[in-house]
Image (tube, rainbow, N blue to C red):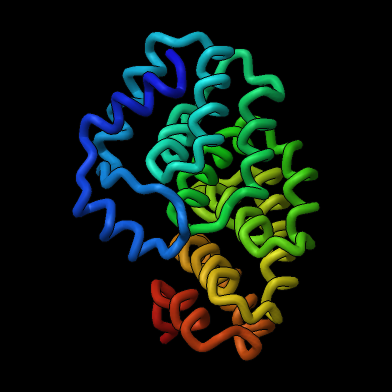
Length: 229
């Protein structure tokens, strides 16, 4: 399947009115087709069943390069899979290369979910992600937290998982002085999810760094913390 054929399949469900609404909502100048995410997801799942990994990587790459909103979402969904065999550098390299193109939360989040799967499969890739934390590109810095969310969500973390959790919390702490709304939101998101598993660790973070966080982020981070008696 070519990117053109895949895009034509998605475009069968285009809605001009919804496309206008999406353009106004996302506030990023690119083409929008007005196709709902469940439709894109169904297309991507069908394609994954028939394509080799090499063909899937090529299709994802081609769809991403169109810079059409739905095409980029579809590209990410093509690579959102717990197990990709062989899982060498192919899928991860493609996702990591996309990070510099992130410019809107929806596309960034879809691609970051694909990235989460590849990081969980091979945590050694976190060495590369750590370099993102000092990027001049805000969306790259944000991706370092969004792609590592699985470690905030582990119910029974192993020793290695706890070490990664502390590593990422260190990144989050270094972000606290950053006044960008999306960065503060990402810190809060990580802490909020962690509070469901390890509320004491979140309390320690907030005691140390909470006063320097934006008020909305501090409130979001503590939303699910149990009340202390």
